[in-house]
Amino acid sequence: MQFAEINRAPRAASLLWSVVAHLLAGVLLASLVVLQRSRPVVVPPAKGEKMEAVRVEPVTLPPSQKQAGLLVSQKKSQKIVRQVQTPGESTTGLVALRQEARRATAAIVENFKFRTTYGFSPYPKYELAFQTTGQIPIISADQLPPRFEQYVIVEVTIDSQGSVADARITAGEVDNKIASTLLMAIRQFKYRPATREGIPIPSQCDLVIHIPT
Image (cartoon, rainbow, N blue to C red; front, side, top):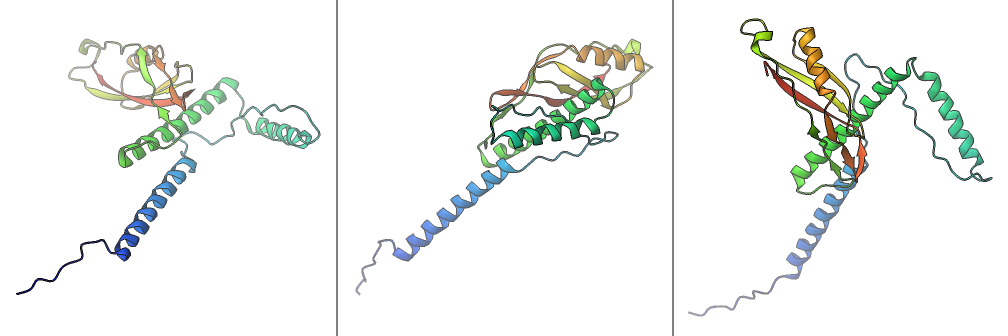
């Protein structure tokens, strides 16, 4: 009985197909990262809110003949924004901040989902806001009807300085006095603001509070 010698050297065709497959996988992953980074995050307005234009300060460039047309177009666009704004500076500013915080929070969530799915974080890099000071007020059962129990969700809007710009109850029902006490305490909270590439940005978070606390 004779045994034929087997050539164990890798075949050129198999090696070539393996290289091509790895290159295609690398290109696909790189394309996914680019799309994830460049895709805009569209957040629909919450119930009861209306879409509105948000004033963005134009970039001031050194005056020159080439930039004259650009400056004129910036001034025109700024006038258009003023025309569509609703009356009430403070209310409009709060709504605009809330919308900006909602968009930033959606981007943070998308970034977190990508990191947990693929094991790394695409650029830009986000960091969540976290609370540094403040405490939920104590609401005892004596202040409530007998056997009353409720979970309340409070939407907290945090500005880029880490202060609570807005707090409102989005789910759950409690007495107006208790709701006022709860929201007054939450508005005194301080946070280290969320960041995008190290730059502070507004964001939102939901606090789930059990009543009685």
